[in-house]
Image (tube, rainbow, N blue to C red; front, side, top):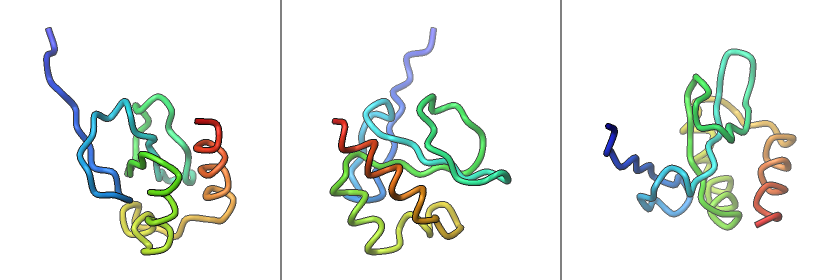
Length: 85
């Protein structure tokens, strides 16, 4: 039985939330991906909304969290993910 509550911090608003409410961005040796399963290996960062993504992009928090430069194609993909909500 696993009764743990898994909280993660949004890199935009810096609030702790349940990880199922956040979108995970993952950096691996093969590149940067949107991890919808929350199970992909590699270094991860969590975002809760489009406004937090904008803040994280402006303050370079996403680059620092993933320890690599995030390409514009990935940022466009992330913005499209949050438009659907």
